[in-house]
Image (cartoon, rainbow, N blue to C red; front, top):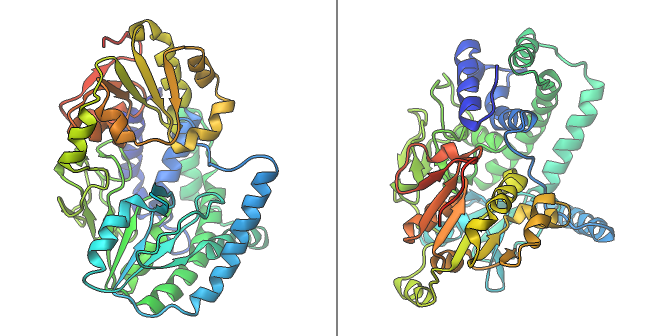
Length: 439
């Protein structure tokens, strides 16, 4: 069976879920497939060459060890703050990445929302690690760094994996064999399920202790599908309302938001999903148990009309913005390089994703682009100003492409893996990866 696109892989996974009742699969009482659905998808997409494995941003050389030492010290010191935690009305599990707002480093996806709900009651944020980066200094509300408990859970699960005999479920082995027979790739699911079942149980213990101290009415979480099902399940079991805050593209072919086959017990899925607007829902198939609340959030990227007017004064018909992505670094770079003749006389601003900053020195595709005199490789910048002032914005499945269209830009989608996200949307130009591009 040839599965060479995000769309085909999603359909393959959905068929398996229906046939083998995967969404209700359990390992020692843990709904392990619900917990690992997205990691399994990522492993398959990487093994099949559909997507690249994103690189975790981390310093290199001796700086890496200083960074890890700093991370460990911050994590250890956070234990003292645990004993200071009291009751709060709201608990927010923040996104692990940070964005600079002036001199303040914040989670851009929850910052505005936290500011709003802090007027109604007390708020505490839970910080989760982003590699070994501990960079937030947001003082909008109280916060607690959960990193040490993540470290303990990971180490504890690894040790336990050696001590306790692995439970080789026939279902796990049958699934592993089926995937290998169909796709020709080996994913060691039995080992994976065993380790993550143990990790889940250890994390669950710490999360339960934490949430019982906080006793929030609502738990708001950014990126619930990405290894955060433990927080969702514990909150639900404690009778806490769980809400996911939008952080990016929500599409039919994004497995975090599409369940053609619904789980009988969606224990790791939130009660509700808060959106920036209907424009951001690109045909998702969410379980009926999840309430969709459109317009519930202020989009963190929108600017005032005055600001937009100032930016538009410098809009250039000779400026192009390309939005790169960590999962497709080489593919996007090679496409732009292959079609370099289309950009003669134009300035190409090639905006890297934060996960690609360390790739710049190693990526063959990005090195090719640096040989083009009219290409500017850009790291940190005001992306929205850059897009507004560009004639065309080009990309594959980045959130920024939706923003660009809403800001009035002409948007071109390259037909690489992930472009399927836009299949059920309008207002975008789509070009085949094998065809040229007309600016």
